[in-house]
Image (cartoon, rainbow, N blue to C red; front, side, top):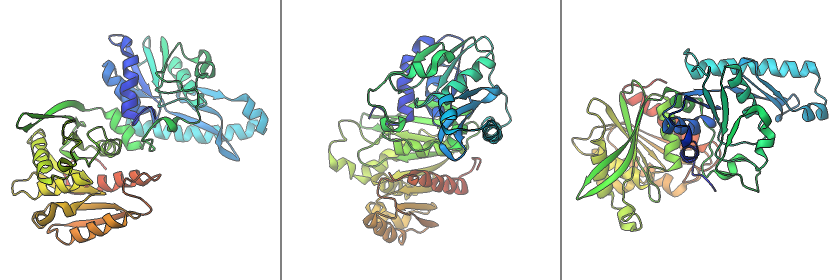
Amino acid sequence: MLYDDRIAAGRRLARDLAGLRKQDVVVIGLPRGGVPVAAEAAQALGAPLDVAVVRKLGVPFQPELAMGAIGEDGARVLNEDVVRTVRVSETELSEVEAAERVELDRRAREYRGGGGRVSLTGRTAVIVDDGIATGATARAACRSARARGAARVVLAVPVAPRDWRRRIGDDADEFVCPETPAEFVAVGQFYEAFEQTSDAEVIACLRGGDRREVTIDAGEGVRLPGELTLPEGARSVVVFAHGSGSGRLSPRNRFVAEALSGAGLGTLLFDLLTPREEPDRANVFDIGLLAARLRRATEAVPDDLAVGYFGASTGAAAALWAAAEPDSRATAVVSRGGRPDLADARLSAVTAPTLLIVGGSDPQVLELNRSARESLRGESRLAVVPGATHLFEEPGALSEVSELARDWFLDHLPGGAA
């Protein structure tokens, strides 16, 4: 496994692109998975971010088999070997392309929200994806950038097969890739978390907003790193409390955070424990300590913004403990695979609307959440994700968690756009 998630991959890729800093660069992500990677690179380079909307051309009777790709500005790439082998007629090819161009135009409008594209005339276009497989969509994006007037095209990906330059040919002027493994089957094999990127996440990245590193003063000389993201116009911030064995870089929490940002909600992810404290399991289950640090982290949220808590595992108990305090700023709470029972008697003091999300194949935790819900005084709901286990690793499970959390916060926190 090379990367935890697309955010980590983008930060790694950004280091290899550092030589482009201070040049006239535009970073262009391929939706959907390439956009979170591109966003990290654009931030590191201080460059504008745009998208190159591309669509695969699937064989009519076997859509998963690509016979080419199309991009904006009339860009088109065909795999002549596939077209010839499966005997696709010109009529069939034209019908597939026409249908995909309709979808391409729809996505372009949705992603840009009616805004214009960043000008590429005379500039260096850095095309970014989360990896290269066949290379067809990357080639279409490169051709689109040239059609838009780019003086130079750089294709940059975190991982690719060793023959990737041959696959792209002269559609790019420069190639950047930190990792080219010998055994390459699919891009996803090199990521720990490789959930499908949603349209909301793409839009969140393009909106940009203010993302900054913060330091939480936890008292007694303890300082904890965090990351505060404020989409433009955000009126609320969701503070994340992770569970044991993870931190602010948790791929699962970051996946949910991106979905919330896409809905216009701010997010704050931070480490509850220091590297020295983490190995001691007593600290992981010291809910009073974790809740106190969550409250200190909440102080980093500007006073004019409402606050919600998202907790996972033992972090969910800390979120409920902190929300039970009389002066708590928490307006809503979401627990993912949480242990609300560890908040014990404080559950009856929680008045903030609380959503408990549990996997249907996590019976012990499910029963603990059912019992804990009976103690909550305020509005509450128990949502069960069918077939999901404790870490929600099953296909689509974490996406469902993100949607449930997003909708709960949008219903109970001010601001955000559904």
